[in-house]
Amino acid sequence: MLDVKKTTRAFDDTEVLTAIRSSGREAEQVIAWFINGARVYARRYLARKYPEFDEHTWDSLFANVDIKFVSRLRKGIELQEGTKLTTYYTSIAKFAALDQLGERKVAAYTQEVEDHQAIAPPDIERRIDLEERQGLIREWLHKVVGNEQQVLVMLLQAEGLSYREILDQTEYQSEGACRNAVVKGKKKIMQYLLRFPEAAGTLKSLLVKS
Picture 1 (cartoon, rainbow, N blue to C red):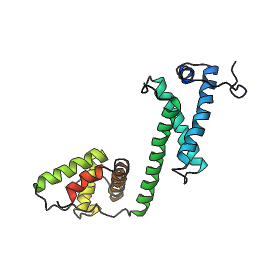
Picture 2: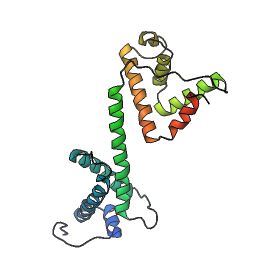
Picture 3: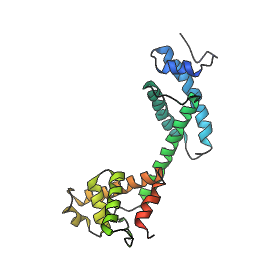
Picture 4: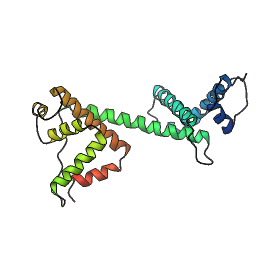
């Protein structure tokens, strides 16, 4: 029986991949050996970019990376020719770190935004028809927010309606539910723009004068 704590042997990527797609105690030990080394490598690489992450954050981040790494390979994902398993593990960790940073920015933003703050209405003095522009904006919001009623509440609030008035035009049963819908909608929009900053340009083209 293999004891990875005592052996000085290094396993190559083929052996690690075979272990990941196998079962048994020895396979688990090979996986543990690989992940221990991959974590050290990825942590050393990312620590310079994210010095604000504490030990708890790193532990939580890598716990999720371990699961994604193993599950994706077990499902049969094919890596590009020449890609090392350590490189693939680190790439997953890079995206996980970006997600973690995005969540922190969103959390900081939502703490600063008051519940009753309305979404600024768009500048509609544009060359295209007003109804067309409103339709494009609504379509964009639906895609990002993914909830028609949340979008409706945000648009009605942007028009200056109170939560009490909004109740008559939506499916929500209380002013508090309307308020929560606005906050959740804003959070989804911020998360999207933080993850896909290039989309901000498309939104700006709809809201700002050309």
